[in-house]
Length: 77
Image (cartoon, rainbow, N blue to C red; front, side, top):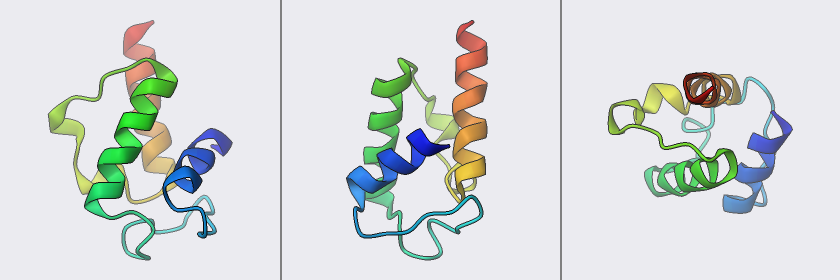
């Protein structure tokens, strides 16, 4: 999860993020920030996130983002 926090801090360096932080509700991730985060995740993990997975529910907290990344990393293996 530390990698995800690092990526979020690249986008929003003045935020404090914990495991259960509501990233969208607390204004840490906007729609533009989510798209930027997706690009960073895809580059970092060498994956491509499908359009149907670009939904708010997958980016609410670190846990959801981690689960999304895991889904794609496991499917690549």
